[in-house]
Length: 138
Ligand SMILES: [Cu+2]
Image (cartoon, rainbow, N blue to C red; front, side):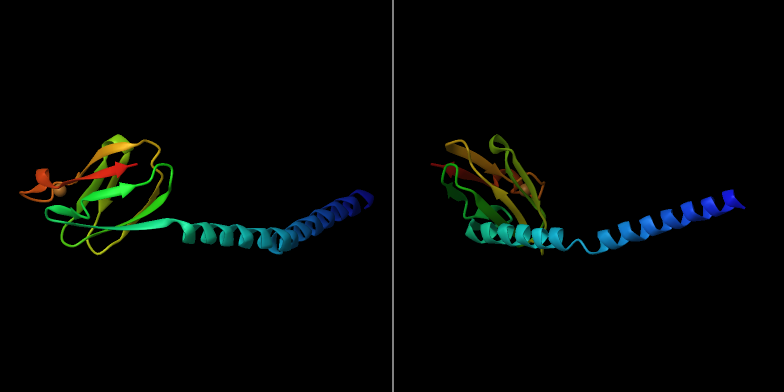
């Protein structure tokens, strides 16, 4: 009888502990506020970044000469007016697929000055190989 009681006590204690942990996890007031702060900080820096809109179509980029400032982050917003294209700058490690009807967005910070070849990396038709441009970092 005495042993049974101890097991029941143990089980009850364990159950109570699980409930307490569950309640603590469900209401992390401090960490929730922290999460919100982090999100707003990201939003603030997101608003400060310079945005560049590029349009791809058969068989060109517009603009086709993109000027960037060294070490200054930019956000590319690229769309296609017709078929799937690529937005590729091999020397800068950029290679994105641009699907029609969908904006492709990515952030990029140029850390090398110079003129870099921009090309379409998706076979998009007869003029594909001529679909080129440049990224100029100064
Ligand atoms: Cu192409």
